[in-house]
Image (tube, rainbow, N blue to C red; front, top):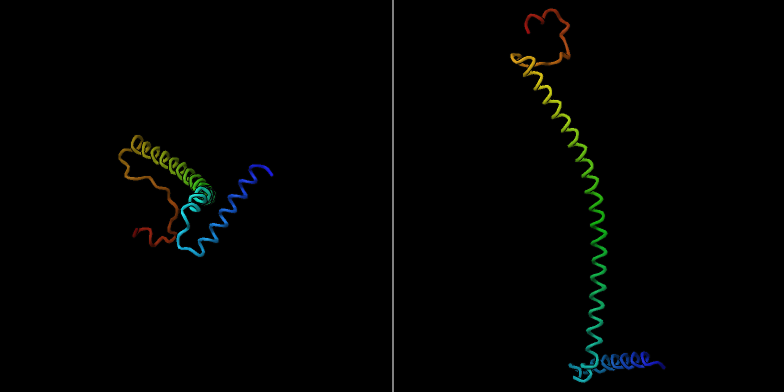
Length: 124
């Protein structure tokens, strides 16, 4: 048997012995606790690392989804911003035309409808 296997068997034996003896005693003997403490510490560290790795993977998946949603929202907002910038530019041009070409005009509007009744034309 190799040296590593012997050490593993001794460690597992001590761990088993520790579990059996602590079932019947409130506190394990200090020699037994001293022998199993490194194993216990190592198993706690391994379990904690596994838990942290799982939490990290879950968080990364959630963050990836959120980045995707925010990317789509960003694209929509960029398009809206571009449309609004074009509208502002158009309105600035209209304002420039009205102030330079017709400074005394109150407003320029396109006629969209005319009342066909001759009776009401005089009243409006």
